[in-house]
Length: 138
Image (tube, rainbow, N blue to C red; front, side, top):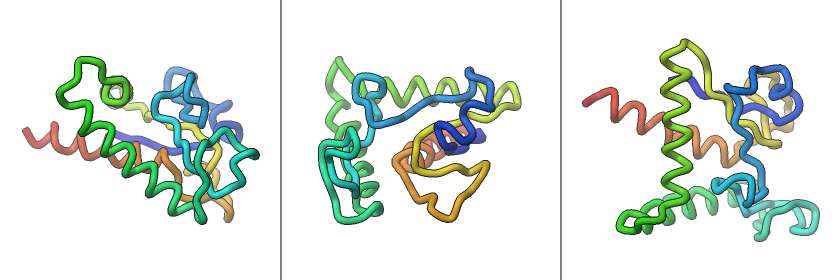
């Protein structure tokens, strides 16, 4: 499975829409939105401020792990369902020889810039690739 993290404007507009999933900070649009930021809270749609980008991503990663674990015995699993939808889309694109693109505002693996940095899409990418590897081994 091939997954790339792309910038929502620099790259996403140039790719087929069926290969791009936008994962911005808007909770209503994405259950997988990152609610932590290193920027002042009023400048973004995030709810919580951290000191660094790395800390914001670590908080998101811990939240994702905790949320998925807490959904194990629940019938309503919005985060797990969102990950399953992405995983299924990634498998479909993989079977077609295509790439799943996760679009955000933080970075761009297609057209890198010096100010690009790690983001919550990297966390989601790791989760999906680990699941793909695990499924491939069975």
